[in-house]
Amino acid sequence: MGYRIVVAGATGNVGREMLNILAERGFPVDEIAVLASRRSLGTEVSFGDKTLKTKDIEGFDFAGWDMALFAIGSDATKKYAPIAAAAGCVVIDNSSLYRYDPDVPLIVPEVNADAIEGYAKKNIIANPNCSTAQMVVALKPLHDRARIKRVVVSTYQSVSGSGKDGIDELWDQTKAVYNPTDEYERKVYPKQIAFNVIPHIDVFLEDGSTKEEWKMVAETKKIVDPSIKVTATCVRVPVFVGHSEALNVEFEDFLDEDEARDILREAPGVMVIDKREDGGYVTPVECVGDFATFISRIRQDSTIENGLNLWCVSDNLRKGAALNAVQIAETLGNRVLKKG
Image 1 (cartoon, one colour):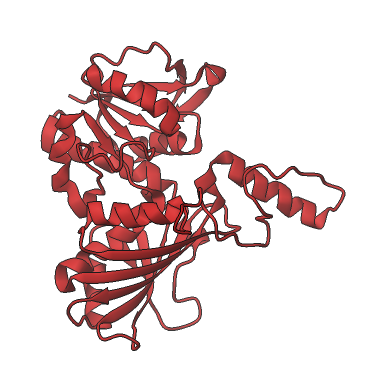
Image 2 (tube, helix red, strand yellow):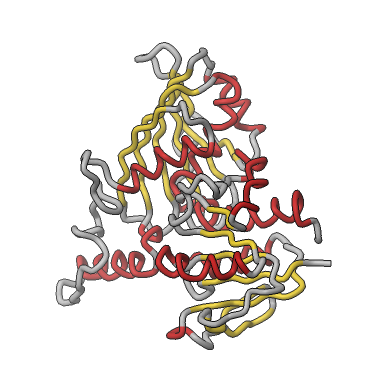
């Protein structure tokens, strides 16, 4: 016996990835509904060897459905998630709307799967920000061994984090660089993204940080440990898919780089590729389509007493969004609903 599953936002980048991953991982699905806004009504999407037509989310009856994976943004989630939850359908939400709600668990299954039991308060589970998800997968096993005091992270985030419009803007600008007669309109980013980097993701806050940077701080504290201090600089780079992060981690206890490497090799969801030679590390183009969070460049930081540096790369559409949502659904099924 399997589950009755809803994917809302099925025509977007993350929604399509959710469908791909549900099929790839053999999630026990008895029935699936794919929802979209009215303007995308009837658009066809793939689920394994099946082709499905989207239905209008407006007026959809969530009663009798087990789980709904939402990839529709905060505004639409605010309207439809309470409706689904009230109908008894557990919402797994990819937007930022519920991440900081104390009554909604924020889950990365490799890190804090036990917290999923809190879903019953609102029948909603939150998926973390893409940049946070891959970072905490790397940090948690190290924290368990030596307790992390402080993290300094600089991100190199791909344009797919801005959705299809971000991908299109990079593509159009790149073509225009080589063909000056090509015209393009800058819509997504405040400055040129092609052959450039932009130290600005989301809106600016009063203290000078951006909301993306604030998210990494707040979410790491909620998922891993509220005592960890985090400071972040988030940068958009001209890469289509795959987020990268340079991590400087300070521990309470000394942790040798070789031991850290061994710990990470055994950690769930982590793949260590760390050779001190040309090409002995992972870059974003190599992680596309993969489930793992890749760790390279593990080395001691000699400027502080107990410090390590790491390079962390992951497919942001997968572990940073769709994969993590499906893993949450798997965890919910295995631990709570127990149908599959």
